[in-house]
Amino acid sequence: MPTLRIALAQVNPTVGDLAGNAELVRRWTRRAADAGARLVAFPEMVLTGYPVEDLVFRRSFVAASRTALHSLAADLAADGLGDLPVVVGYLDADGPPQVSADAEPGRGARNAAAVLHGGTVVATYFKHHLPNYGVFDEDRYFVPGDTLTVVRVDGVDVALTICEDLWQAGGPFAVARQAGVGLVVTINGSPYELNKDDVRLPLVGRRAAEAGAAIAYVNMVGGQDELVFEGDSMVVAADGTLLARAPQFVEHLMVHDLDLPAGAESDAPESGELADGMRISRTRISDSGVAPAGPPAAGGVIEPVADEAEVWQALVLGLRDYVDKNRFPSVVLGLSGGIDSAVVAAIAVDALGPQRVVGVSLPSQHSSDHSREDAADLAKRTGLDYRVEPIQPMVDTFLANLSLSGVSVENLQARVRGVILMALSNQEGHLVLTTGNKSELAVGYSTLYGDSVGGYNPVKDVWKTLIWRLATWRNADAASRNETPPIPENSIGKPPSAELSPGQLDSDTLPDYAVLDPILIGYVDGDLGRDGLVEAGHDPAVVDRVLRMVDTAEYKRRQSAPGTKISIKAFGRDRRLPITNRWRERS
Image (cartoon, rainbow, N blue to C red; front, side):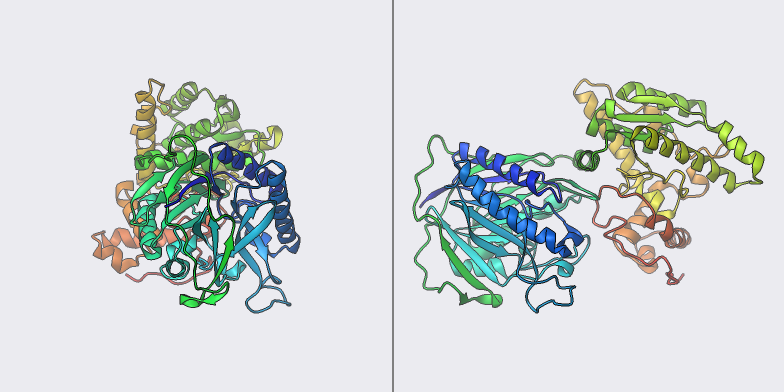
């Protein structure tokens, strides 16, 4: 039984940076070769970054991807790496885009994988199952493949699959069993969601059983707009046993030795019909290999972390990559002394370092002494650049020229703060971070062009009750490492308030968050209607009130800043509802 040393390169590409991504592949392939790997696999569409969205329709971009692929194959050979088979995800096309007037049935853009060897592209595979739910629109962009690609490496038959192929029963994995492969390599761009890692391992085990083969699963890592990819690459034996698992949220090369059955001579033709309407294409790279030198390579198994730690890492990585990949030098945010801005500030400092974070206290006549003190305390704890810009003189100037009262005056204060933050952004080049949590966004508890102003919102997909859990976890984590907890206990413990009027509390206009969040989670994330929420035990009057707030706030959410997705249904790409919409759940 041959021993195949496989390397899974869990790397962080950037959408559109073909030259930079190609260099990334070259650099990590060198590391794999130095580790004695005989096969190295990179994530889905690593060469172009993922997802590329409507760049798929740019024929110039598709052509550039294909050119970059062939250049990469030649460059790997020039680097002395031509003998190492490299699996690379990229964008391909065998016809015009499906949205064009000259589109051809069954042809078009392809989500593809290529095997590079000896300076050339020796095999390609086109993704078979195209997801069209949640954040995915692949049926809009791509044409599905109908052929399973099998390459023989060191005498082992290895099948190629891409991401969604793993999430659907039948298709490539069923065909892989009929093809008699010993290993299925699946390259992935699978976005992070809380607890998705708990679903992924059993899923990989089921596909291993379906294929009757070991599975090597490599996922990308990094942030791309709202999405963040956590890695969590793994190797699973044919019986579903977990053999190796990579850490989350960091680039990592996992190298592991697999004892696999040698490929037998198959009676199947090069292009023979198989189950589920797929064909098989076989390519021989090497029939036998040299046994790996030195001690066996074991990728190790990284144990999962607590939910709060996982979410925190996702939020830190999502923000860091949004800032760095878009070349912002720094960020600025308003520090109110409350829990939301404190958590966002702590995330920003963890992501970028205190020297790249500006926190601005923007007190009005309604700002309490404890809020000002808590904002200053957070700045001292984290070391960020702290400033104080009182807004009352500017608010008074507006009020001297406008006749405003009630909520209009409250919103004016928020908008003056937004103007100041945007002015600092324009003057000094910072990216403005907004700090509204998912609960507030859900019920419209924000001021357009006020506290909602900003270019990115790290906690956009974080429910208020989770905000408190994250703050408590982050402080405890700091204490466990003998570091200063970044978030003042006062910010965690005090009742939440916008402080836009005397004695104001969130509870004046909203149900308690412990009551509100479960209703919102059921309605927004779970698509439950009124009856389903009432059957779940929620008070009917509170349900009616909450649903009314959610339904009438869609126009605000449509204008909100992007933010890191951590849930099954984030506002924006996941949840697409019309603004003009008279449908209401009936009481």
